[in-house]
Every structure is written in C-alpha cells, then in structure tokens.
Image (cartoon, rainbow, N blue to C red; front, side, top):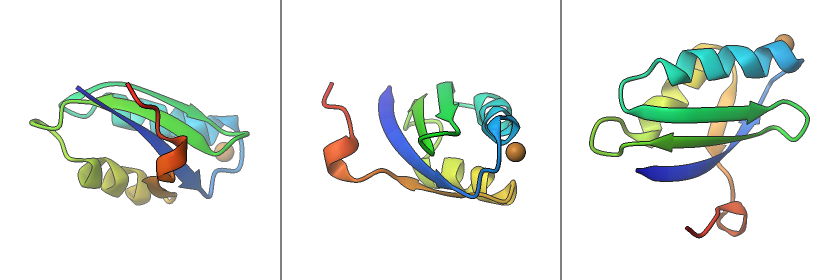
Length: 78
Ligand SMILES: [Cu+2]
C-alpha cells in the first residue's frame, strides 16, 4: 500500500469533498481516501500494483477538480 497526500483545487463546499471521496473510494485498488475541503488536502491509500496515482488524479479531474501530489515536505514519511 502506498499513501499519498493530495492537493485538490476547485472544490466549493464540503459536498465537493464528499463527492471526490465517493468516486475515488470505489476505484479498484483504492483502500481509503479522505478529502478535506477547508485545507484543499486529501489523503489516499492505494495499491500501486492495481491503480496508479495518475488514474486517481484523472478520475478527480473528470469530476471537475484539479488534483496533484502535495509537495514532498507535506508527504508523510511512513
Ligand atoms: Cu461543493
């Protein structure tokens, strides 16, 4: 499993964050996702063998938001 901190642009309210969580959590290979509207941050845990971070970003972008990996200093060292 891999953990990635996301930066997400374009959310307007908490429902946007919930919508992203619902979509991404249904993706094959994604174990969990949490998105926080206020901080524009998300945390996703996924199996890199089954799903790439690019396809997670792509799915979020299809909803109308811009997702990217947060800067290295914000990534958690686990
Ligand atoms: Cu919204």
